[in-house]
Image (cartoon, rainbow, N blue to C red; front, side):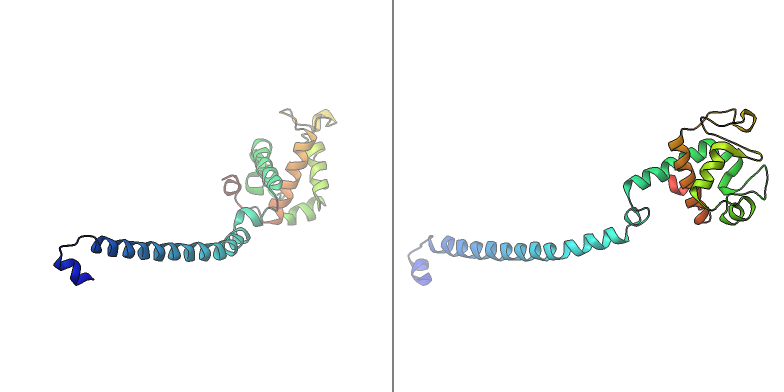
Length: 173
């Protein structure tokens, strides 16, 4: 038929042939795209799961609420405590740091509740920051903290002490 079209100067055969070729090319590209979509659909869930498991945002701390508390704790620490306790140390009384060892051996502090009590009421040279702190001479002359803020601050100090006081600046970023 091709020879007959060439002899009679027929132009209908070649476009017909090119349409068939284009249709086959489109079918091939559609099947390749379908295979790619299938590949990504099977690969995407394990990749997303692996990312979430290995992501530092998902492993520590456990929840978004806990993340907010850590950031709020770091902010409160920066506002109320860092003047004397930079990086968990103590510029007023060098042996009374916020390291786990010093908290336990020097002050008998083992829990967040103990840290809360000292932060609220004060102890020794450390002033109390609680709203109802008494006696007046033991309390800070600066701004007082709400009970909930002292609780968050105590959790933050305990967490930092347990971790050896990693950089607070890194926590805030």
